[in-house]
Length: 479
Image 1 (cartoon, rainbow, N blue to C red):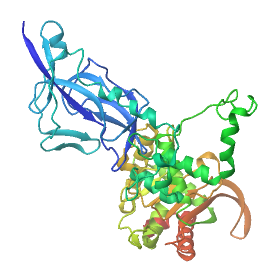
Image 2 (cartoon, rainbow, N blue to C red):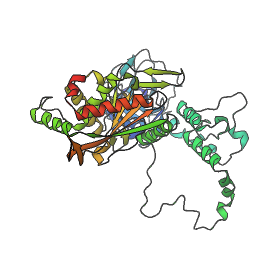
Image 3 (tube, helix red, strand yellow):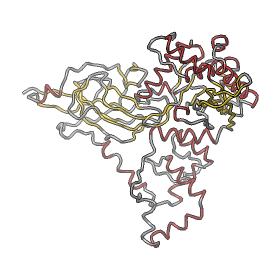
Image 4 (cartoon, helix red, strand yellow):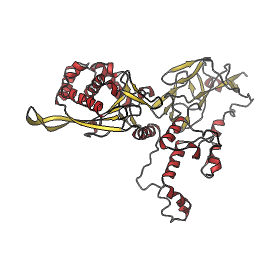
């Protein structure tokens, strides 16, 4: 009888979005006992920015999935354990008899001591792996010393809001309350002192839910005494808040939808929004679009749409007025005028609204912009937009016209100074060359951050966009 010593390697939830703190496991593509190879995708996770597939960075056999589908996991937490052939620096699993199960459980493993966990979108990092020392126990494979992650949630139970006593909730004098950076930012926006909030997270960490609960209690102090009376109220009233009526559907607020909601609230109550509107005769633009489609000037496989010319018009206007392509730096008390335009296009997807952007869009030709726009839209529809594609945007277009909407007052994408709404194109009576005739007309709405964009600058940019769409041939001259 021969024996083989297997080692256990752990794969942790990576930061797939530069600074994100958690991700939800949407689906597992493997199960315990499956053989995996270096680079194989083992699961799909959803962050606050996008859905991302995670590849495993080594060969082996799946030993344990630490979290089920639907779980929200902090970055840096072990999500899967892989049994591999013995490696220096890895923890032994057990001595296993070689007969029938050995070949299936021990694929051709490659020694990869220099590989580190993959940060999706950036490839594997190199460097010497450093691991905490493990105790080696002579136990069978059926009882590995790894069930800790399964039992880990147990300490959460005592932290339930059963004991909202002040000494438990308040941090000792001089100590900083435990909270993640996004939670601290939310507390600042809400004007909440973290020291007064009851933490319910593991290890006494304050969560977003804690902040919202505290803020709600502060906003409605008269509701607090009623808590003690709920059990004495008629039974018919008690279930109302928790039992949905027939036909009601409750959708968890998480992932992209949750991030969008938080970003819009932060933007709406941080940047002073101003919105200006203009109606535009786009008859010539619509004719130009048809001509480009018929002639194939931009390429036979390139999709041409009115949105393409709106985007080009906005980029041309920004080239003439670069001050609107800027960002407000609160910490430094500076206005940062961006060196390149990363044009965001708001896209509605099954997971919610996302805003991927075309990097350095201002430097692209009309054909290059059309290609990039088509790729961006197709990737968003397939749900494959990467976190990197949604970072670093400087100005955004939202095409509400595709829904038959004339206009709106769009909310700024956080960190940007302007957003342009493109409304539906309709045939309307219009004064043209001294006569009232039917023309193709749309409404543009430009929202901007009034801290760094004043009315004059905003008006000039909007007027330039409108003028270019009325005379689209000027796009070639001005662009």
